[in-house]
Amino acid sequence: MSEQKIKGQKRRTIVLVIDGCGIGAAPDAEEFGDSTDCNTLANTARSVNGLHLPNLARLGLGNIHPIQGVQPAESPVGFYGKLKERSNGKDTQTGHWEMMGLISRTAFPMFPDGFPDDLVQKFIAKTGCRQILCNKPASGTKVLEELGQKHQETGYPIVYTSGDSVFQLACHTDTVPLSTQYKWCEIAREILDGPYRVGRVIARPFAGEPGSYYRLGGDRRDYAVPPPEPTFLDRATAAGLGVLGIGKIEDIFAKHGVTHAKHTGLNREGLELTLAAVRNRLELEPLKVSDAAPNAVQIIFTNLVDTDMVFGHRRNVEGYAGALVEIDEWLGRIMDAMGSEDVLVISSDHGNDPTAPGTDHTREFVPLLTYSPAFGQDVAVCRQLGIREGFVDIAASLAAWFGLDWHGPGVSFIPELSKVS
Image (tube, rainbow, N blue to C red; front, side, top):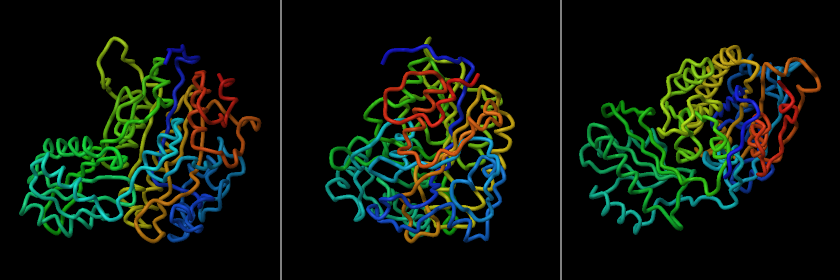
């Protein structure tokens, strides 16, 4: 991939992913086992008698779809619309990859009956763990209630999956050291290939006592299959842009196209780091120290996972609503800190309707909100975007903002960006 000089050295983008935040069933929802009534945002709002999200409202969230408590803005301050996923999946990896320009035609394998015995035996032999517990789809919190004490008594790791393409390993840090947990996940990643090539192997360390176990979100690690092709992030870093991944971004892209990274526990930490980065108050060390490593960060890419991991999968409607309110409060500070060379893109990777049956993601449209102080109130610039045919339009639009050639899929939803100075 050849290098290209970027048009605006001072320009930045902030991509904020509210994980598992859909806005209505996609046309193919039933093909993915979901109801045509699934709608993460609208159903959550109705269940809590309305949401108060003033900052998301002024960006145009209520103009996309009726959401109780979120009134349509008379003059939204940015672009608003929704994205329809083109990839074959409704998982974290597929959604994030598509946002960065990569459409996945083949779905990752799922294991609704647990992992096959030959794979389990290979894992046991290579790790020396002697045996595993669980081996079925399970809730990450309930499995600790059911098997946490037995794990501590035996030392056997808890291995489980979900409605996503994941191999999850949970161990108490007093029973199995973090370094060993990470090593076991690396071994799992090596043997999970071919027909067993799950999207992610996830280390889920936990602590606490029986009856009060809790997961250590900041020590979670995702061992993902790397993107099969270069994404927009690779294109950006080849052009000399610094890319900061906050949350699990580094893991989702297997470090490809990411120059700096900060892992997080809860959303608050991710929001604090994002705001500090926008204010240029975040001390960062590049992942790879070299003469070519960028000193500055032009792309801040944040995943806010609580809406998905903590509340969506657990079908906790009140918690989900509270997480949205928290995001909205921080969003006001982030927007106030932005300069005229900054553009903010808010979207999601899939739905996770906390009112839906089961614990799986939901195949939905996702919201699209875009803002920059440079937009002003020009009606020719601030407009309704409608339904976009693919998350890939985000990659095309970011390329336009930086003046980078983009030959991948997708169409820039704000072509005027290249004219804004």
